[in-house]
Length: 263
Image (cartoon, rainbow, N blue to C red; front, side, top):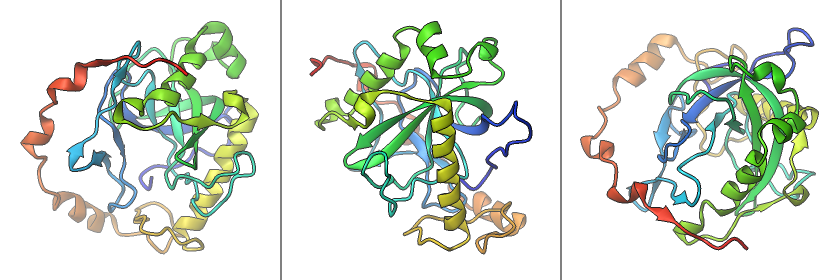
């Protein structure tokens, strides 16, 4: 969240293009995410009840069905009640589902063209899901708004809603809910939401908002009181322990299929 910059509009041709940090490559299961409370916000695997978290393969989906990640320098403020959803933010950067043909690498930073947005309600919190495509995708020029996704990738948006609605069910949780009757809003609506989340982020890193434990340490934001020297940041990274070998062992049930009757 602190490592790279939200792309600013330069010309009318680039106003819908932003950076995306890839957390989870398509078809993979490990629940990786930007660790907002750790210094410099590394990408780490989520842990629940002492175990590394993997999303289930909920038939017919194998892991994540897009490259999944976040737009840096955005923040869904948990102290702000969203006028569209009636719920506060989820305290994370805004999520992105990248729908291009390439399976990206974890940690890769790509430029994406925003196409639309879905308003998910996750355990009472607003959790926006931006739909976007890699600008380097061979078909990127054909995608300019959410209706192009409906036309060129029939069934993909419906599968996206279904995936988000049910992906926690194998863990014993209820289905997620959505604002707008689970309808996708268009590109302009999505960009307005992203800009709002960028404003909340600016308030966060300039200490105008209490981040309640979020680490805002960064090396690039000149107006931030949390800015640190690059050498100090490197020392933090160099001091991290090596990955635990057991953490690299994928559990045997990661390839198990779950079947759940749709409500």
